[in-house]
Image 1 (cartoon, rainbow, N blue to C red):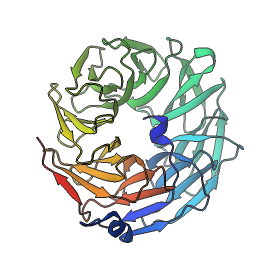
Image 2: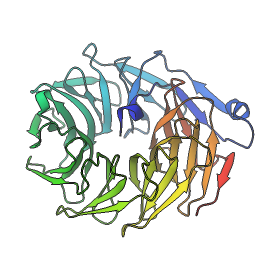
Image 3: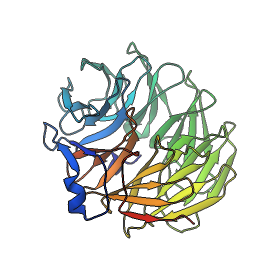
Length: 374
């Protein structure tokens, strides 16, 4: 996910149901809970093992927790100007986050106890994900192009592995079905794999300058990724065999990608305002978002069997069924960006412009606009 997607400023909006009517009418159905720290610049968002949603506050230098009822608690990061960035739930029942500017990985318990672990080599850690080995794995932008993938044990032991290709800009990272960690190398145009012992394999994406970005494990045992500049959806097997599937609309600028409940992969076409679906055999279907110039950004599977997405410029949350029926739920001007499924069956999303985070319950939300799929 991109930094633009992550640069979020939070409080909480609980969207109980958005019925037909104006944005003003929709706003009256919202309950807002301002975050205590103004202009805190939250970035990452993740569901916690305690049933709450946790987020990083990059500018506020804090970690926030919000209950399903909208109660926000903030916990200060120990290092001044630590730059908390990505966040993920760990296998130990805690939350783990990266400190991008202080070069640390930190752990926070559900009760708010923070412990920091300095990274041995100077870098800028970003994304973080739980690995199959019980450790947390993270991407690092290194000094002088020496980028790295790091891992940290629940006890705080850090090991770093230098990515073979310099200036690779590792970004997205996910656990693969083969027990490895897979990541995108945005500038070196590769997909990387690292074993839990730190052995790398890099695979060059067939399309030159494709800019691989988002990555997710697919239901077919392969890894699927977006090519931001190449305008393809890529599939790479665990043996490194690539297949690329062109997106019909040119210059669509592909961002986020996620596995859907229907066994397909769903992705964002930001620049042309489409939601895309690709089957595991490569058939691509595009579904236009009803609102012009909506600029969708993030996408996540919901507990209701649909896909949910944010419309950054459209100021709406969108829902698309697996048959392609698109519905929209209006918000006040807010710039929604990141979105994640919560443990409470809500979809939680960040609002760039209004310094809020919102929650929408699939079972009670009522759309303002709908469009049938192709």
